[in-house]
Length: 248
Image 1 (cartoon, rainbow, N blue to C red):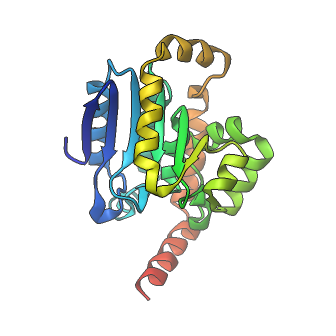
Image 2: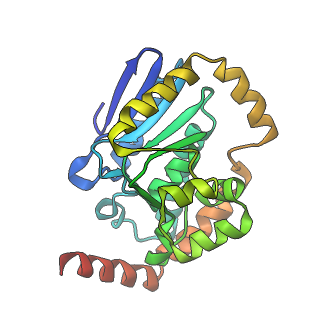
Image 3: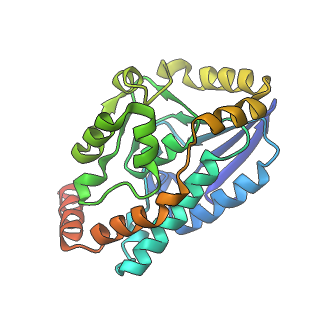
């Protein structure tokens, strides 16, 4: 599959976002590829999502492509499109593990919290950094973050854009397991194998009833709030400043 690699080994289904030339950023085509990959993984006993390489998990949205969206309606449509994809991950019938092989910032953190379980290499950072570009999480990540770490922590993390190291992320409940970089691949595969060997689907269905992992009634209001920020002068000024800093 273009942009997304599909692998099944010993009952573990792995989806790898494979766009190293843009640090595994998600474009509209990547969204389509992820949708197709989730269809293909329908019978998985456990699903693992990771990025290629060892520098980044996913670098969020592909801003070079998404920057073409300048209207309020277009921004709403983009936010809803990716939110529904994250909802597919959140409501996938089998347990989903996000293997944070690298940094997970901005939209990448939203993909990570859509998973049921997050495991991280010990040298990664995770952060909801959207506020540094004068926008907000658009893919359901704010609601899922609040459910994981509590209202006040979620508000602090999303307004300050703080980047947490793996140890701190585990301390507050944002990450569930932290493994040394040298043994990260072996460790997450071992964990995924144990989950695959369990009756994970019925267990997840019961837990999902007690603690819902998606909030469809929030979709329109969240997308509208995001779109207002996306189309603002403050956002595009922040984007221009960030690009200037990267090129200097």
